[in-house]
Image (cartoon, rainbow, N blue to C red; front, side, top):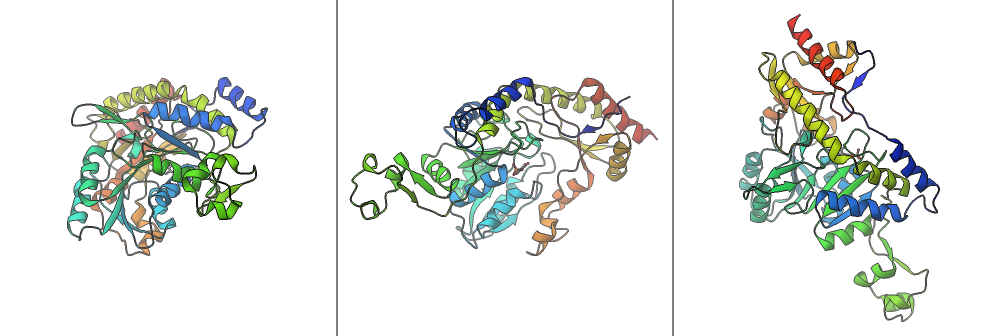
Length: 401
Ligand SMILES: *Cc1c(COP(=O)(O)O)cnc(C)c1O
């Protein structure tokens, strides 16, 4: 039997990945080299969007999105409580107000009807945007959200950290891939090792909006720009640089800090790892879907199962979630048997930080009920069939005792 610990998620690094990183380390650039632009290009192609901006992590990606969309103190933005807290925190970084809405107990995603209820109960203009999350890898139906966003003048940031390669079917039965920019203004991804593509740390913003794209590239690096990029943002340039007429005449040192930005850059060697990992992304996704199918069948009619991720078309399966009876003891029993499942997530509105804003237990019954039963099973492409069977057998064993 398996005595090696089985985590809920794990990165996969190949010799090819190591070669790619080594080459980057031996090149002239450690940061800000050509591998970043290459990673952005291949990632945009993979996702099917026009622009991609690589950044230092997914949280930085969210912060830049919130800045690029101009969130100001007091602005109200709606998101789900069943997500990693960063999805909500980006609003707070800009002083905005986080408004949570309940989840759909079937999909575990932000319930569009709860969002509608919020929008309808306040004067138009009260809310500025929505941050839906492709939780666990299940794609949010952004076509429906876009319709709502148009009606109420809202922007959409899609938190697609769990879902590179995920898609939903739109009303014309076309596949709409997470982050493709057809409905959301901006989408974000993370390259933390437990996610689909590992860079160590890393993140990406994708969009089809050229103006937002330019804002993001500026904000990612201190709000500083030079060369060609100076031109579209030209501000009293003749004063500043002594009468130069266009960017081709600027002296080499000339740059402008046009906004208050950050250092949210990714390094060239992380981008090299990302590009190398991306080559296997589809294979990994296929394997995740295979694993999900096996879990789904194994637990289908079990009396101890209250709900599960299931076998859903377009699901990217960052996580495979079960809702079970006696969750705590199952979790402990699995640990005793070297299976390190995880709980995603403690509802964000119940975090002490968000309780300070008046949120409390009972606010979002579906999210809280989900949380009291959920458990994320081992789900990563290199999980072997023996390991998966061991996980299934151990869970069955727990409930038959
Ligand atoms: C991982 C994650 C983030 C944050 O990404 P980091 O790269 O860890 O900063 C944000 N949102 C969700 C849903 C995530 O899973």
